[in-house]
Length: 469
Image 1: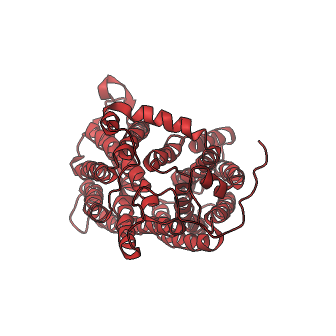
Image 2 (image 1 turned 60 degrees about the vertical axis):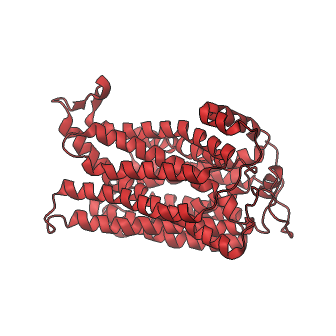
């Protein structure tokens, strides 16, 4: 691969050409009101990721599945023998695979019809309803739990694609780093707030006269109610934009299965934008490292460092709280140094943090909390700025479809990091080596992102980048 020239020096920029018709016509006050409404969808949905997927549902659904298992420890959904302990990860995997199929369909329909907001509402309330329904997950109803998990996680994925697709339409180019960072900060603040309340109920259930299983079901259902209630705010404040010109029957055809053909066309078009593709590949690598650190840190803490569950829960909360400050801090750094430089700096910090994890002493919570501090400070900001930077590399009228690819590059390859982690442990028998192996994702992502001239990449899709990017 030849050397890619660096971005041109900062220069006065003309208005962004990626806007959909009427995109930024609203005056500043109205646009800021819309942006604040957009933040609230992060506030609404983040509790699903934190309280449901990360903390409560996995252990609880596994116990429900065990209660339904036969003498050999197997359940038999659709006649297929499945070990009880494998049911939850299999359900998560099924939901991820299904979301990869559904996201492009929803994205194509949204772009062709210009109806992002009703689709966002439908996906959000379907997911919130499924999550609230987890209150009825008791006894041996493991199949109900699996179905609700799949419905909720697929709905969550679709709604996130549509939510991301609003960013280029509600924020001028020079505003996007700030707006994206504020959205992530809202999400992490919400996740931390609800998780504290849920943990209070869970840990104090005996004093409250509530059975442990009932406390867990209340925590799960409360996440769904929270998601549904606060989704009202973005649905009231976000404005619908007309679609970029399509054929007269485009909307009808999109609704009748045109979605995958539309995705194929988008992929063919993406080949004309190799710099956008290069960014997606860089994001695929370093984001897979980020997601693997998040999912495997508790395993490393418990198995590799011998820490108890209380320490691990405390570290999760610490990450959530500090991610709020980290997202806002990196947003400010991006305003001064540009999103690309700030992301590159965050990848250096990720590499240093993961490398330091290799040297943590066993059974010492203080150093594990220090690792959580490092993760929290770079977590939200690196994700928020990646989203805003990608928004400059998307052609007009293709926001939802390109953000579907963005999410697919996340969800569809999220097995790479855990695979490397697992193989390293299998070969070495050391969790320290396994955690250190993740450095390769940050190093390769850094190297690839460094080669992306983002100003030229924005120009290639018809956009003009802000003064600092």
